[in-house]
Length: 316
Image 1 (cartoon, rainbow, N blue to C red):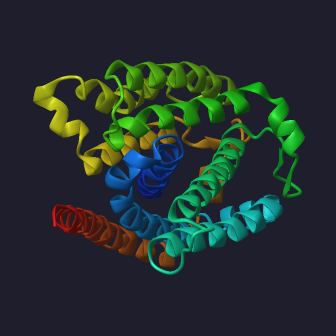
Image 2 (image 1 turned 180 degrees about the horizontal axis):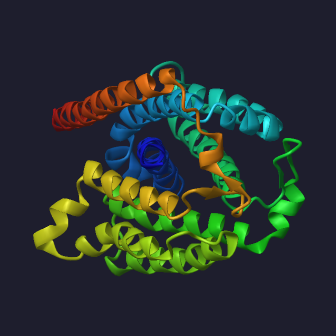
Image 3 (image 1 turned 180 degrees about the vertical axis):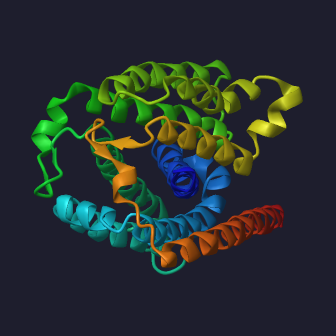
């Protein structure tokens, strides 16, 4: 059983890093929609590395979850088939918008601003779809595990599901001005994040009888820490470090995920009963550790190099 905990923890950590990456894109979308002019100097230079790495982490996570829990991906694929198809179509549209805005084609009618706002709106929708699937797997509302079905109306009718999604969106909206150092009053991100946590926290507790509710306390502290540190000039450098903020977000997400262990679907499915205990899985587990470390190191290098190049380009 201890081995199962380690394997699940490792894959939860990979998912948490993916969530931190996709969250930074959702925060970028908020900045582009509400602060476009400021975004041109503070957001755009980070979109390409975030966009590139997010997909890599997602594939890395999908491959490992397939090896760890072979029944998980078929269940998700069949249960959420229409949503996954729409997701893939929108994903192509999102990629086309950002590539066109950055590298390929614009004219007087279709401007860079329009393309980036198309990218932002599609990113919102994709983020909402990810949150719906993630929330449904936690609460089990609207999910038929035995027949691979999902009833969106039943899902929406369960108020805690709605509260968790809305609260999570509000938290990311509050963090956007911290992550991208937008010009807002220092207290505003803290107030918005607190409102989001007051909505998402109780909703999570109502969605799922958590195994360890106390893990939500350090998760909340890590989530609001960047906004609080931003107030103090001595510690503002921490709040301005995008890698550190993503580390905080990933750690917070990991604690929330691990507070559910080992239950999903509103404590109706025990994840340990689905684990693959084959010899091949043990080898994949070791490969995951090595690959995960290399991917994390390359991600850090990629962010730092791209950031420095962008700053030199802007200075020139």
